Length: 271
Image 1 (cartoon, rainbow, N blue to C red):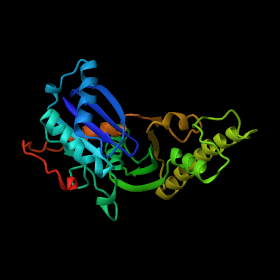
Image 2: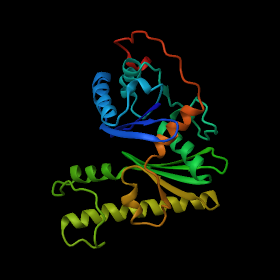
Image 3: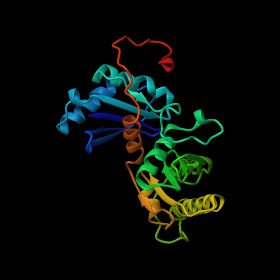
Image 4: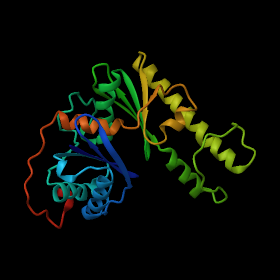
């Protein structure tokens, strides 16, 4: 079985794939200094509850946009499962060209969404990922990564609004019943929700106009279903797109060799 780890700025998702289907997926808040032992105890408990055994895990793959978390996630794979994880980087075999001025700067999550998006939906395609930042990634007709857009995430926008305006409360995200709010919270919810819908529709329209051809639009991330309710520009929501990209990446790259050696206590970023 394959252990898949997707470490984002907000959450770490760990999932198991048995070469036929996903057997389980679990989420924990991202904390860069959370130790491999903390991860291990948490994950093994969930595996047992799902009827899975750690002995059955024969490979692992990690995708992260949080470099400080990588050291402990690698130790989790090595110390608790006895496998050397494949780490998603721009220099792996992605099966497509990365059409960026600096390919090494493109986040692993964006490349993973490109890989899975093209495999499942073809191209040209726009993949929208609602995370800490909201990314719009353009997948060419042949599957190449063709660039994209990065915008502040909706949660980040809400937090900034609350912190910068003394009289505005911290609110949750919801689709308001009306655009015109008649008190503070409905007005804030309307501004955030419909403002974000306008951002989605505007950016996708400009991407399509610049591309000069019809493009499908797929969305992933926790808020994708909610935002999709407010617009017809999102044709499909796929919550497992990044995990699927990690699975595909592991399938087309050789597993790294595992050496049972002690990791250095200092300079974790070097391993």
